[in-house]
Image (tube, rainbow, N blue to C red; front, side, top):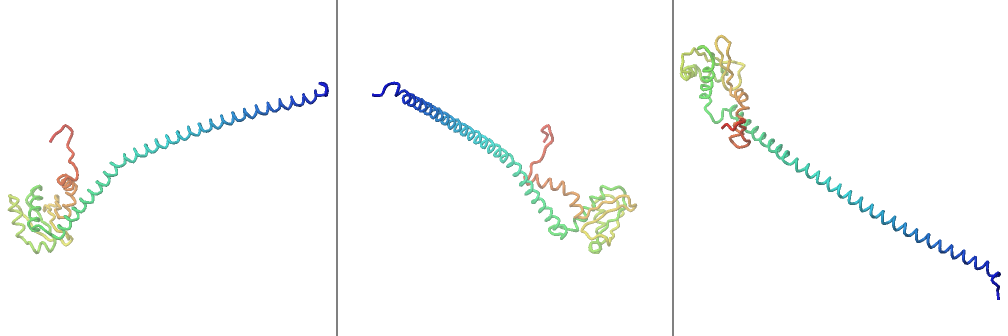
Length: 217
């Protein structure tokens, strides 16, 4: 039978190994706990980042939506304005075509009326009504008498042809050369078009008429 002194080294070795195993197990337990804590923290941080990014994405989507919605009225207004401009331009072109071709109205009557209106705005009594050579040949001096009658005052009128005048209509000048009224049809159209354009747009409800402040009718 072994004596205690003989088993002492073996007992010590076993105790050392047992203590080492306990320390090993404790180290492994703590390592597992730390790993689990790290994994849990990482998962929580990842979830937080996902929520933040999702919130940011939603905020950015909402911002872009608001920007898009804000541009809709602007774009609609731009398209409407472009369409109105296109319609008005087509009206202008059609009027210009009819004036150039003398389509749909009494051309001689128009010359007489427009010349009379011009003379009523001018001083004096002696005027020259300049026409194209073709119009001078077609209307002759009878046009002068008609204009004088319409003007309602004594006038000394001369109907002349101007070789440089190619457009339809008349240019009225006084004999002293101090007053000139260009009532050629296309020239008159371009002169009056801004106001005509506005009236057409308002009367056809393409645009609303602006009224002065104060509610005046």
